[in-house]
Image (cartoon, rainbow, N blue to C red):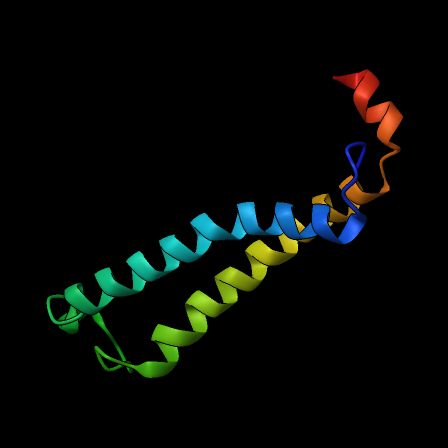
Length: 89
């Protein structure tokens, strides 16, 4: 913000940098689960190996938690006085 960015741009930058690895990890995790689902079929009770709710709800929940965890620091970063941040560095 000291270099001309507004609060929305700073918030977007922080959220993008935080959520990109989370989304990549979620995609890799879902792909790995699809591959391993047939192997662990005997350990699944009440859930089919390719249950669409489990394969979509769990990653969406984890991404939502990561978004909330990133949103709080992003909001704090937009409230910091630019001169104080420059002096801190």
